[in-house]
Length: 120
Image (cartoon, rainbow, N blue to C red; front, side, top):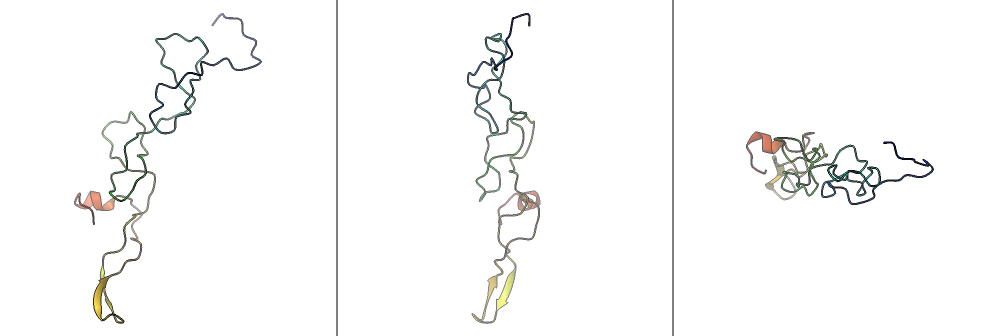
């Protein structure tokens, strides 16, 4: 704009970002101080993320998708499956069949949701 500016220090709005409820927000508006009120306050974050919790039932992380992405599954940034192996194995010590219990080998966090929509 045609305003005189010293450029010695930032003269930013500093009000709360209009997208502060979403993940990744830097909280304070980075628009020029006194910006037109028709321009929403916006911080310096390149992306604001969805605030929904991951669809994997035992996962408590938030979704990794941008807040304004259309029709996305709410899946977090983790890639490995958080569940344990359910394959039955014979335990010689206990003399019974038990679930393996090791970490699932899938590198797809929500593979069980893609298979049948149910938790393991």
